[in-house]
Length: 341
Ligand code: TXA
Ligand code: MG
Image 1: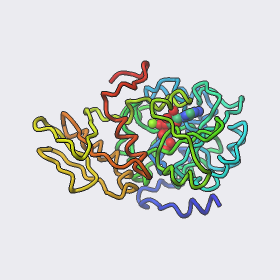
Image 2: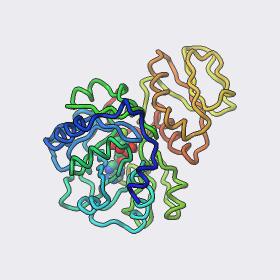
Image 3: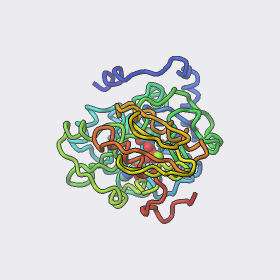
């Protein structure tokens, strides 16, 4: 079942497929405690052996990531869940059977023997089986659970192409595997199974509707309540470009002065005097794929402001709007100990 799902996922340009020797080398680096930049179908990750505390420490250092922000553990076989989690609730197993490998992360009760540095001391652990063929081959060769956050500096936009990985992250990694542009483009959907009912901790690359059609309704906490539910990564300002950003509604007026850029999902949305415009597809699955690359382009255009048109918060729109709203810098939800930009 799982292999079949994998076979159905669209593949990547042959030219960007690392050789078997490169994947073997990367697996060796991870096994010895080094860091490797890896492609996944959602975003690029910064990978280390989840069982090696020193290696995991290096991830936090490379990203300037606060130690209270837990990491996702990546696996290639369902059976590995039992080495990481204390138990596998029926509904979580059902989601895994239907959507793994894929852009879905399950938060489960942690086995006491599993390194707590990975989970930031929490009793729960986040697990995901990625679908990208390079990630799958690498994980198979590692024969270890692999901790991998997105390969960006803390609070910044996640890379969806190898060329978008910052020099700081590269300088901490011993190797980077190029798997081409990421097909999904936003991070995995995170669902927690440690309360009485499943809880959405992060909308992402697997639409909530698909999850609910499989296991029934899921609790959707307000964004500012997610941190209190064990997901401190869900702080307000995150996925943020360096340029101030604002989401406006269709009726609202654009600025009349200043160097501003526009991110929109329809050629009909007015752009006024914008000096840079990025138009994403009205097909929000496609828009998600290109979202971070477009934000990055606008961020590099020397603008005073990025003006974003909203999309409806269902399907892929839920994950897109989550990233856009949290990318606006002047929100009041900032975590007190988050590094200031
Ligand atoms: O698509 C993805 O999930 C990517 C690729 C590389 O797999 N990874 C990713 O990792 O986005 P990161 O570290 O950037 O985001 C992990 C999110 C954070 O919001 C974090 O708070 C949450 O997952 N998380 C991780 N472990 C958790 C836990 N034990 N309990 C609750 N939330 C957790
Ligand atoms: Mg991240």
